Image (cartoon, rainbow, N blue to C red):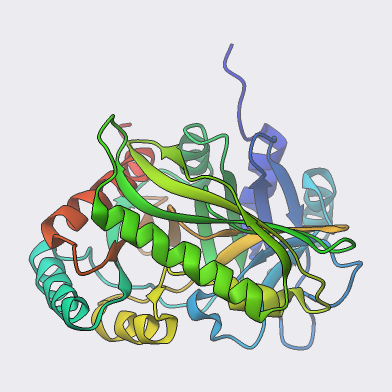
Length: 371
């Protein structure tokens, strides 16, 4: 008999939180079962803020790409699925909805994508570097977010999986393999990774374009760690990480870094060249100029603060979700599914488009009502 990935209690808790706009997160560390948490937003500004300097703050965190917000949104681990159901059913209090606008009105057009990617590649041939150029697939569905999350999570038990809502960010779900920081606050031991380079998950050898792209990320992380005063910076041999129909190049990196400001450390590491590019400031400017959608939290980071551990992943293979209450169907959802690809001087724009297709296909399948 098939065992549900999301328990009935967790499903009820999520649906109640969505109905009453109560911030929550349903999260699963790699290889671990899903955990539910929720908290009430602050009374003064209805904020959900990660208190990064408070050692007693435990919970889920999520931020926006390019770290351009004044704080990192968080869901403190106050309620579990049982206590949040009791809390909501006792109070029946509605909290303010998210006012975040959708990232775009329609899916990214293929011809426009290729034309803009061609322009970016031409510049990179003159100047060097890398820019991660992303796109959005818009899918309308009557399938609710809990069902989609369960279908999607079933493919990737070894990733960090999450479904969340805050007033700052709206509803997001994702399954990401890329570790930004696995950090032990007491010892300063930091595990991170360079994850860049993408090909179809077959037996083909890695080409120069992907090797070069991976080297950009590895070099960037080493430079950041050195600038932060890290010691004993070590890298393991590159390996392959498989994610559905694609594979990535991965280099594990370990260092020691004592910092009283873990948020500052994350802002230095994220976004890496794997989700933005290099030089970082130039790549981010090009992203804002050339992409026809708002990244919002795509390419930012998501993760957990649990006691002495801070575990954070890049927000990849993800979607933000909107409910259309005016739609004739009783339940109608719009899923904005993100995918990005690293452009270098060696990139072929049409191939980058196909790579994006491979990255979004399983989430698109999970969204479809007739799956």
